[in-house]
View 1 (cartoon, rainbow, N blue to C red):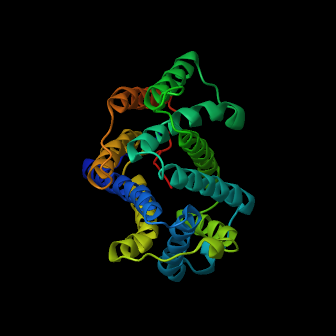
View 2: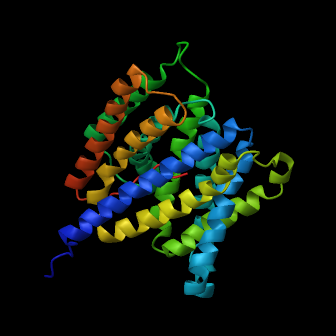
Length: 304
């Protein structure tokens, strides 16, 4: 019996480095969305820019290489629902970051592994034992610590962040399914084309242009951050297995905290230091438990 292939240590380290760079790019997406909202750009336009620029880059780079095969999907229906789930996640998150610090929206996004574990029961027919159900419950207790419902600190936009996390969980589950039909380039193309076509009829009613040089820079960079981030995580996944990369996704909280503090002057409050480790710890426990049970893990990123 042949032994499963294990990438060399150098490849794994490079994969980890590229994954961390991808999480930095995803932080750039959220930071750009918040910045554009602060200078008066509608969140609908921001979502459109994120996907339209992404689509142009995918077509420019991948179409000459893959040709017509890039647009041929083995399961167009799955691609549609996958793109719809990511569009919902992006829309809810981009609206939420206008009202909440990046550290709060990012911490809530870390519930995605918990939601994937819970949703795998009705959607994939998987069995989840009491240990993982307990971890899911503890993780959401951590969310309650962060958002503190019933107090003056609670903001209704928190519900948008939770909706974004739920949509992302659906997106990740659909990604598992669609990966057996289509290449990463095809999936990236359909994520961009569906969102762009869906928003194109309404975005002219909300369109406006930046009035400053930094506004123009962010105006275009949001799509670049998205494309580069997806490319980096795809290459990272080819160099290191998901079991190696998954824990490093939580390093994004440091990038989000730095961006929130330095760019927007919103330092984390004390409750984030209490709640975020609970959420992250619950996600890591589920990862360790699924690794012990030899289940294939999905690298979960704050994909917008």
